[in-house]
Length: 174
Image (cartoon, rainbow, N blue to C red; front, side, top):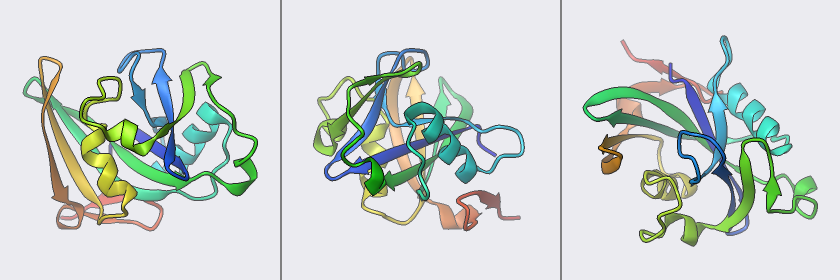
């Protein structure tokens, strides 16, 4: 099981992004999420993390796949990635920018987030986020980093590697 989750919350053509106050990715924009707690499913974890970091109580999130990474030749871990629509009850009340313990939350246009010249967004996001927002079939996005630089991000179909449960968790096939 992977250790982390991440969620991108959509409001029209914008996503709620977090500019992180802490490492990893200090000063970079990314979705919201965090670590799974012992015994917690990835789906339950992402709902909890979104609420803790934003105050938004999601009632549903769409599982988009996983992102794994290798750093300087060593596989390290990965994360479950979800997308969600901002619930209607927050549409007029959720104003940004907003300072939180984790960082600064702000709505950012999708085009800005995935633009190849944008140096302020976590480098692998522009590779896995567009297919997930388009609700493409779930994939694993294997990211390879060398000396702090993203070398590659390869999408691999998940159905060949995993069975995805209804709650967004995954069970490895024997």
